[in-house]
Image 1: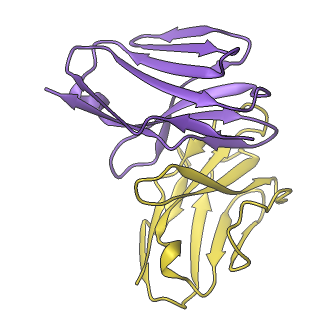
Image 2: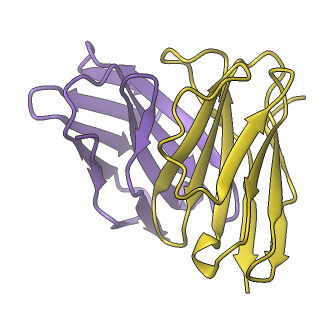
Length: 114
Length: 109
């Protein structure tokens, strides 16, 4: 596609439910990143993929968070047993490679946990 | 550490220059970036600079890097109301990019 897309754009869920967020990177981009942006705060790095592998999962806030990527393309970020503190905008970005390549961001998924 | 710090808010009058500042702690940075985030939108890359450069100019944007002081700035000349947004600086370390908290630029007509 022309840019990074994310779905859904908005998600409202009840505390304790599981949610799945999707990211479609730019075609051909091998690196993919997930960030979280809480209201009024900066970006918090969660995880990155090089191909389908995630070498560094230390940014994931808890074991309720997991992510996978398949076909060096689509990635899903899953949050199990959501809590109110998970409410944030979740941003995905992709880049051609890891190096210093520019990251192109999607519009984000706004998650609200009631 | 990998801290990247920015002031939270800047207000300027339309037509004036804006200077947004950023400091970082890790001297191993290779690339430094400026991103713009308009309300309700994702981040858009404005410009970036290699760590061995000290200045980069792109139309109304000027990036200055003081590697010794670990200080990065973004100057926007002739600031317009459309420049109102949150500006994030970011640095690339080993495989990971760390973002600052963002500076909200308010342009007063």
